[in-house]
Image 1 (cartoon, rainbow, N blue to C red):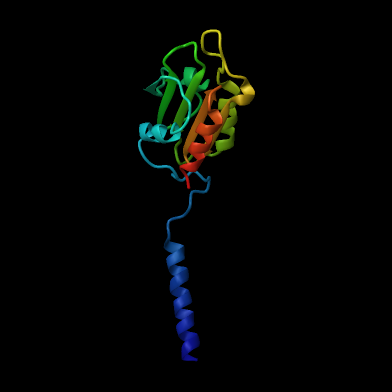
Image 2 (image 1 turned 90 degrees about the vertical axis):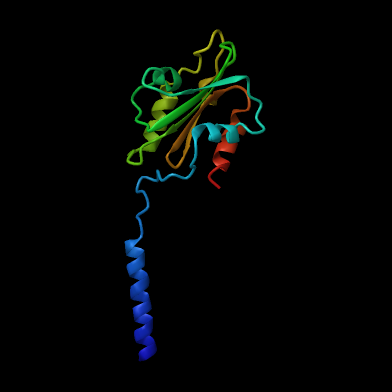
Length: 159
C-alpha cells in the first residue's frame, strides 16, 4: 500500500511539473535558429556558388523590392543581393513575430508577389523561387545558382 501511495505522489509531482512547463508555441513559430542574421547567412552560403553580394537590412523603404509586398510583419530582416544588377541573386531572411497566425499564408503571399525578374534583362523562373521557414525564421531564395544548396544549408541549421 505504501508503494502505491509513493507511486501516486511521484506521478502527481511529474504531472505538476509538466503543467507548469512553458507551453510550446501553438503556431509552430518558436525560435529554432538563433543568432545574428549576418552570421546565419555565412552558414547557409557555406559551399554554395554565390556571386559577389551586398548585405542590407530589410526596411519599410525596401521591403516591397526585396519580397514583393509590404504586408508582412517581421521583427528583423536582412537581404543579400548580387552586387551587379545583371546577376539574378537575392536571398532574404525575415524573423517573424511569434504571434504570426498563418506562416503558410505568409509564404504564399511572398511567393506570389516577389518580382523574380527585378534585375536588368535577367531573372529567375517563378517555379524556382524558394520560400520556406524553420520556426520563426523565413527564407526567400531567388537565384539560378545553387538555390537548392542554400536551401538545404538553411534547413540543416535547425538540426
